[in-house]
Amino acid sequence: MEAGEVRYEVQGPQAHLTIDRPKARNALSPGVIQGLSDALERADADPAVRVLVLTGAGEKAFCAGGDLGQFGGDGGFLATHEGRRAYGRLLTRFQDVRKPTVARVNGHALAGGLGLVLACDLAVAVEGADLGTPEIDVGLFPMMMMALLQRHLGRKRALELVLTGDRLPAREALALGLLNRVVPAAELDATVATLAGKLAGKSQAVLALGRRAFFTAEDLPLPAALEFLASQLSLNVLSDDTAEGVTAFLEKRPPQWKDR
Image 1: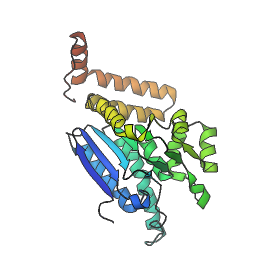
Image 2: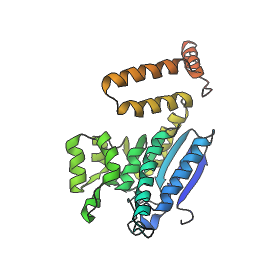
Image 3: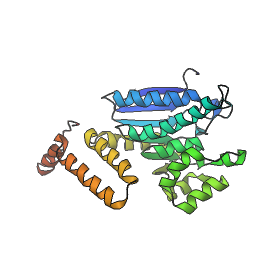
Image 4: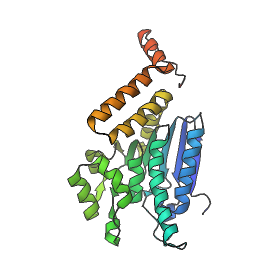
C-alpha cells in the first residue's frame, strides 16, 4: 500500500478526505480504497467532525476510476474479487456514516470515481468536469457503481450511460440530477464551504436519524416505506434537539443543539 494515497485533514467541523494520486488522475487503488475506508471510520468517530468533504488532489481529476495496473490480480482470482467487494463496501460505508457527506468534484469523475460522487449525499462540481462510465470502451461493464446510477437516473438514461460510455459535461450531469451545483473553479472552495457549513449547523442527531431513514426507505415498497418513516418520525420527536428546535422557534432565537 502506497503511503499518503489518502490525506485526512480536519478544518473546524469539516473533515476533508483527499485522494492524493494526481499523477495517476487519482485513480482507485487498493490503498486508496483502504485509506478512504479508514478515513470514514476516523471521521465518524470524531465528535468534533460534523460533515465530510471528499475530493481529489490537483485540478484535472476528482477520480478517474480503477487503476487497471493495480487490479491485475497478483494475489489470484479470489483476492482480486475481494478487492472489488471492498469497493462495494466503501460505497455503502458512505451511506452508513452518521454524518453528511459532500463531494468536491474538482475534475473528471469517471467509472468508479463517478460511483464515489454518487455515494456522497451532495456534490459540487467545477465547470469543465466530465462524469461518465467509459470503462465499457476497454471491455469492462460498470457493474458496481451501476447500483448507485440506477438510484439516481431513470432506466433509459442510466442504460445510455453504461452502454455507450459517453461522458457528460458537468452542466448536463447537473440537469440530470447527478450534481447539486456546478461552479467556476474560482468559486469551488467557497461554494463547498458554504454548503458544508449549512450542514454542520444542523442537529447532528437529527441528520443521522434522517439520513438513515432516507436510505432505508429508498428500497422499500411505498406502504412499507410510509410505515417505517412514521416510526422514525416518532423517534425524531422524542429527541432533545427536536424539543430545543421547537422552543427556539417559538422564542424566535437560534437553536442550541445538543446533538442528541
